[in-house]
Image (cartoon, rainbow, N blue to C red):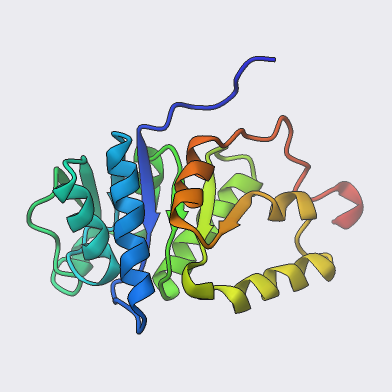
Length: 201
């Protein structure tokens, strides 16, 4: 059987514009960025210099990696656009930000974050569910940060709102090395079940 994997040249990292309350969030963010850089993989992210976004960018840049930021005009001041990136795209809207980050990346890793991180994560998983892309999506559950979210997703599967096959489009790990390895070794499903059948309309 032919290898259906797409070469991974850049990974998009979704993460918070705050550091969070525990050191593990910062250490995992830096570790993921460093591991990707060691493998010659570029990083795409939200373009900020603060919070976990800044940690990711700084760690990758120190390791010599390509780092591409995508930031909307309205957040240029609030998220303090990083001044030392390989490239910074300034876009008009949040929708343009997410679309461009998706276009530039071959896979996605979500670190801890707030509403914005969750928005980015769920949109990119939804696009996978709909067959818009077949790229790997990995959730790094640093320090069990996402335990309640994962319980909610399991509940949605149990209640019939998420198909088990679609839930499987989101890989989950609590280890940075495993997160990077999951992206690099991902093989898209041969066929993704229909999101909605005629009998459910």
